[in-house]
Image (cartoon, rainbow, N blue to C red; front, side):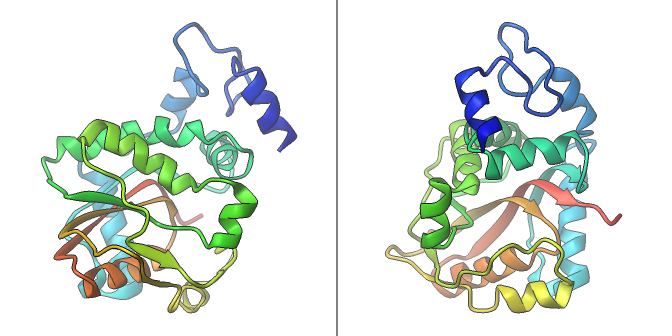
Length: 228
């Protein structure tokens, strides 16, 4: 957190490699964005995300449409950047990644009524002060020109971190984690999270949206965990 506060006060250093940023650059240098190795084309990341969902939850759980920017490993510069977003208070990174993700979604020509970020439990939100998925969603919204809705679903179960859990444990961890919120689900939803590993969280959230008014739920994530 100290490093995160330092960067807020002196934002001229790349959060991933600590090199000096040039005028016009923000938070992450072009060299690191290149090293993140974005999935090629507009469909590769989405195809990989859908494949992960099918492998863990079957064909019926896989979204018809999906997008992901980067393959993710638990080390390296992308990991450092995502850690800074999630745990070091550098929430502006969310909008930065979100705009890039929004451009990818827009290139696919899909249309949505609203963006729904995967919510944090209220206690976790108090602790962290912001939801990184909401920050990403705001960046996407700036590109697509559609609203971000936070009250469609609520995280009623504090699940803790999914890191290090097996696939079965992840599914159990998010079972009944969400419930409908104060407003009805829009028909066409783009569900957004930061990093997907098995997809358990998104599948659980999507099921609540579909049960409460959504006709379709597409998935979008900044990153997708690769097997190591």
